Image (cartoon, rainbow, N blue to C red; front, side, top):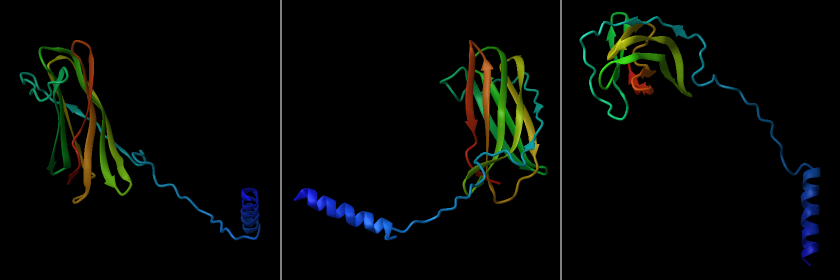
Length: 167
């Protein structure tokens, strides 16, 4: 009895498929621009800041790096950005910031709109760099990301970002 029911159901299904009882749909897929794509990205130059005599703030006790901050403000040029990296105690062989990105919030995520390679200094306890970015639009949402790094009792690296902010 079970074999007969299975055979009848299989026959009905096969007939439905052959006679077009099941609709097929054609789907067209359009690719959006890749999140973080580097199309039309501004490449920025950075300027090292003179921080001689400045002690790094101790705001990160889980690593040898400390005082890793990204500061930004509005100025007549657009967006002014300062990034600092320090070490917990003493002098580091080198400290630096790399992979700097300014990203704009778009409907599908974050789009990189500007980059800077960064910079490093040797034999210091704190280093900093600064730069301006002019192509910002009032009311738009941005974030700044970077990687702080240094050699203090071994190589250390710390990714950092500002979080989203509206210009």
